[in-house]
Image (cartoon, rainbow, N blue to C red; front, side, top):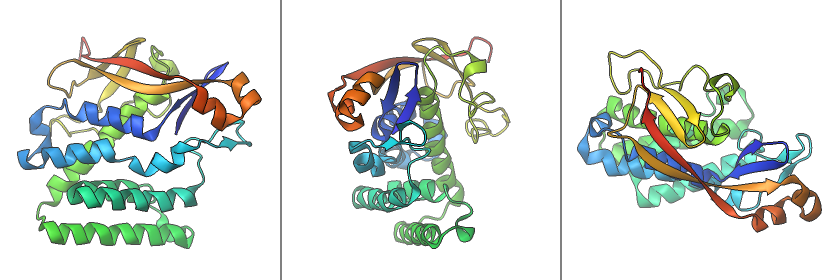
Length: 261
């Protein structure tokens, strides 16, 4: 779950809805960014499905007593996530092996220091690395650079969607979530090998996000589903019931090119 707090409410966005926005953005990329036309549908499937591991975790939101807020993806206990990460990639692999390769790399990248952590983390990373090699061998993939490009596209879409989710629509650059004030990490040279700039995103009003450099074919509008949970209803009903009774809302986002890229 992605959680944003206001004075009277918690804004709650499921990981699946966040991933849907990621996929919608990826579907508007200029075709050349994929590097190989034959892989486009596989990469899009990976981006749309990359957080299906969270389906079961988000089905029943739980309360974090220490933070006095719902658990989010940032503070949710790690060991249950490891179990569901593997399960989700298993499901993706049944439908699309190349997509599973990209999603496996995505989750394994969360634990770069796994060798120095509890054994469960090392076991998870080893399992996913073995999965990745098995898929590479089965699909006879020979271009590490192409796979890496597609992995970076998944991560970029994940980050850009999180930018939308974690920031209040219309927020000033100075008040943005600190992850994004200096641009989207990992976006350098992805769309132009000679361009060292990070992709910069900025809300200009409550429905418009400007991007520079602009990575899409044309400006477009997408939607993000979310729930606004009144804190009073949580106190009265408990988090899970308050969440279930809350209306499902939709935020419109118009993606536009910055005036002076």
